[in-house]
Image 1: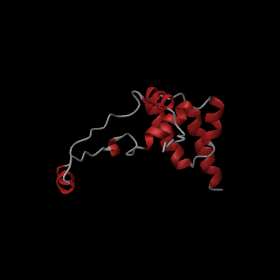
Image 2 (image 1 turned 180 degrees about the vertical axis):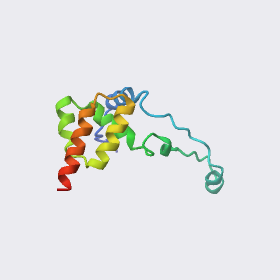
Image 3 (image 1 turned 180 degrees about the horizontal axis):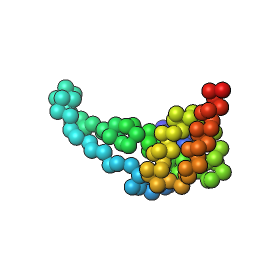
Image 4 (image 1 turned 90 degrees about the vertical axis):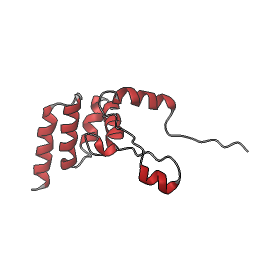
Length: 117
């Protein structure tokens, strides 16, 4: 029996994402967990993605996706993000040196104001 997998991501996609993420995320450590290693009778290492700028591993997927969008796609994408999340995203992207401009933050504030009307 030959099992095949129809993966949504190709190796080339992963390599491109690696290039986009280079220098944008922290390289988090993977210390050995003595507690879990003893309990599981094996070598257990923990990946602390909570040490990323956003406090989560989600920066990898979010930054990779946003960085791969064309300018037109980028403008459309921001209309689907809640204002609170959008502000955090703008702060992160500006900190990471992305091409987004401060005008987007103003638009975010305008959108938030309209939602409260």
